[in-house]
Every structure is written in structure tokens, then in C-alpha cells.
Length: 126
Image (cartoon, rainbow, N blue to C red; front, side, top):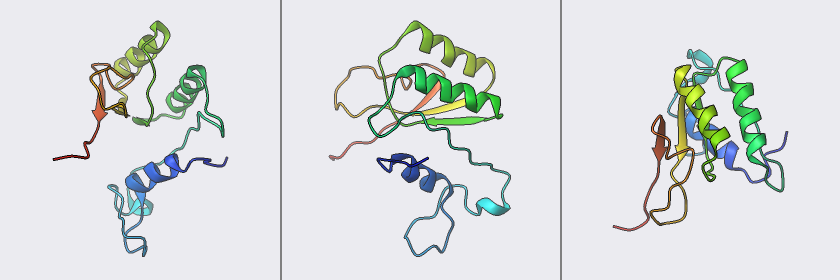
């Protein structure tokens, strides 16, 4: 599948880019080929976005292949179905890392606002 906006490719590079690659980045895993880490990509969105059901289906796929950590670089409004799915991930001991949001405000973004999710964010001012 093609990564139409490049974001998934960017995140995969942060996680697993090989060192000495002439690109100026080394992933946090380091040497992926000689590590105990398996990187699996579950694509939820196409060229024109997607639906929450697509995200939940991708999460189910990650569960099925034995993922221990899931990165979700997007946000959505809280729904009972999503809350149930993320509670299931927590019960299974699967760590979820998610973007805190891009709104620059105090509005909650999910899944980052679920208590079991590691929320990642940044600011561009000092």
C-alpha cells in the first residue's frame, strides 16, 4: 500500500531508521535487523482519509499479529466503541502511543486522552 501523505513512513523512520543511512536520522530501535523488534504497519487511511471503523479494524489486525506496542498518529472524538477498544488494549497489556493533537488548545483528543495511552506532543514556542 502507498503512504499517500508520508506520515506513516515518517513515524516508521523515527522508530526504525538504520544508522549510517546518509539521511541524518537513526531510529530509536537502532539496528532493526539485529534486534528483537518486529515492525508491522497496519494502514487505516487511504488517500482521502478514513473512518474510525478503519482505525479500529487496523487495531484488531495489530492484536491478531501479536503487537505489543501500537502507535496511532491521529486523533478523534471519544466514542463508546473506541473507549471499549482501548480498554481492551489496556487489559491485554498492549501499549498505545498517540499524538496529543494539533489544535493548540485544551480540547481533549482521543485516543491520547485515554488514561492508558501514552500521549505525545510538542510545542513550537519557548
